Image (cartoon, rainbow, N blue to C red; front, side):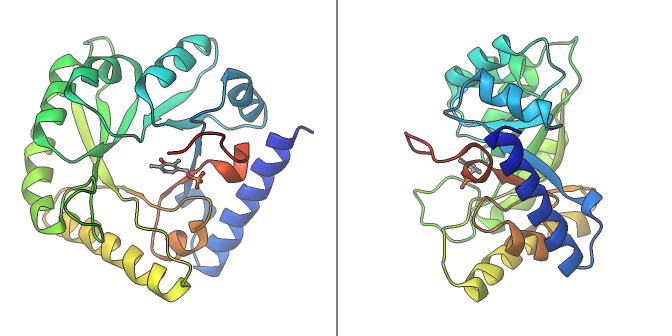
Length: 230
Ligand SMILES: *Cc1c(COP(=O)(O)O)cnc(C)c1O
């Protein structure tokens, strides 16, 4: 078995154990393999181990990788920031976008989504702990943005995503994840019918699953350390 296959099995075992500890079915948590900075061969190895959903941060890098892997039935998630001049590439190449924090970007994605493709699946990125410079909509603005995005054609609002600041303290980590979950619950209480809570990475997937994550985004625990960041 390859190293990537071995690591994938270990990550799936962590997810199963975390689900068991939280009294949840493992089927309620989707594993998104974050393949940024790794080439098509690494993705092929993960696919050989049964992984089909992949996350990418850099649009240009992702578009090349997606093209090189057209022969495989993969699902591609954009989890990086999107500038206006990149929305067309995203609308044409990805299945999901997790980083919606401005209506303008969602409008462009909706307008540019090719008619032959299914609706682009979207998550709002919320910022519960950062300063003004951090990506993500502040929780008080999330409802208005969610309603506006949900009204667009060619896209479907599926949930909430967040990238909390890393904290080594499990209790503090749980509190921040719970505040993200609270935004998700508040939007659903307003009738938005969201099914995706995209939180949890290599270091905090157990805490995220405890907090109700339905999609964990795991990179280094599957593919190894990255030689360049983000
Ligand atoms: C890189 C990245 C991940 C994966 O991080 P790891 O710590 O390698 O698991 C998850 N989400 C986002 C938004 C990322 O940029």
